[in-house]
Length: 163
Length: 163
Image (tube, rainbow over all chains, first blue to last red; front, side, top):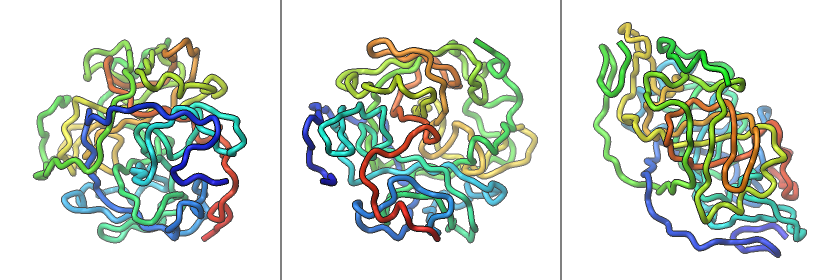
């Protein structure tokens, strides 16, 4: 049995006080081939279908220079996920694991992160491969893949601290 | 000149309507040696100082099984960052780049992501290396490093789609 929002055997939900400690603004929208959560990839693949990331105003200018990176880290809001499970049973077999030991979309702050391969940038639309989310998923951030990025700011003392 | 919140030559701020499209709950707090933004590492290093991640209730149970992963993806809220710059000049040299072409903490949704090496887990406190954030930074998510995680849920059609 695959889950949409039901709780499976041995899963544990906790009472949550949904207070707003910080406010997210949606900065764009992701267009993918998947309109059904039960058909999405469980994880994106870099040879997967081309998907589109549309950036909203006033953020178009913030794309300047992004075309120089082969891979991007993409953060998105998993808007259909429940947020109150602490133990989950992905295989529906009665065995449970903690939410933080899973990359399930069900989590207290349902933020997905993927590394996507950049195909093209045209105006405010990026084409990428490697996403795994539903069509219409709200975008919350884009950054260069950490493996490809060298900080430009001047060095700071913490850069040199070992533990 | 290093920046705290001032705008440097050629940087561009946009008027932002800070509406709440989604609400973040802080699920813990990060304890690091850095109490000054001008001394933090620009990026974490896996041989850096040991830092502590404290998980708040009701999320303690969600740590079950996390000790089996050598590296974790950590998401945190960069609570001191301004959010309205679309072009930034990290070197303060008049050259600007788009916010999405940088890993600067200044971004519309100031969420930092790091890959941290897990040292120990004791009750609701994790010790890790590889963070780069201020002492007291709010935690928003923890997941296994994507390179170490194999989905447990049954396969879905999207898993097999190439583009």
